[in-house]
Image 1 (cartoon, rainbow, N blue to C red):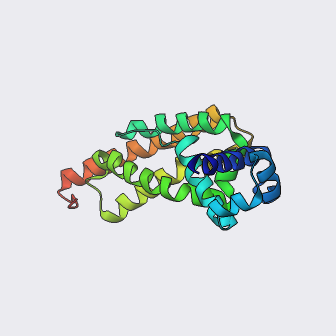
Image 2: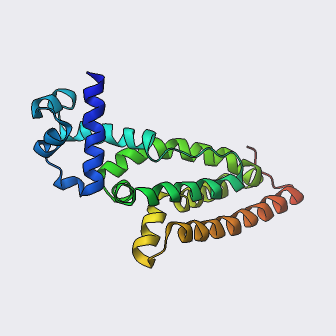
Image 3: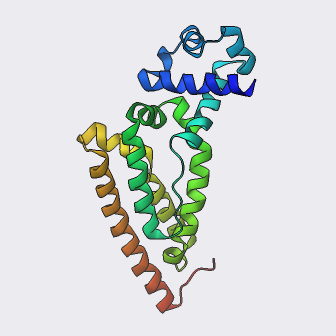
Length: 193
């Protein structure tokens, strides 16, 4: 039973890589997965359940979180993610702008935000809570499949070019954060962590 469920999900993802999510019918999915439509509905009572399961599968099997624990690791992780996005651009596009994408990104983003918060702590610990939140927000906004997608679509950039641009922006931001944190520490205005 678990094997059939996995086959349905992976087949749905294959179809997603070939076309738009709204174009994937249950009949086409059943035919490609070599199962009856009722089998799909036995595992996934509705399309939303299938989309949610596909989102989880994609986050685990295709676009995994690249481990990092330092501010510099953010850029390296994003560069690795751009490589993954470039290998499956239609799937990355779907993750960036569809309901499936929101589902797939939700758990992934929570883990990423927490990892970013920890990685940024050496350069944000002297900042006010509002400044820390702003720094974390802009970093997670830049280091995102949406940034990859927008820069490719709107500026015709390749994955490596997107990674270079985001790395540049992150480097500038991180240097500014170091300076602000250092100034706050020197003036005794360090916020409690």
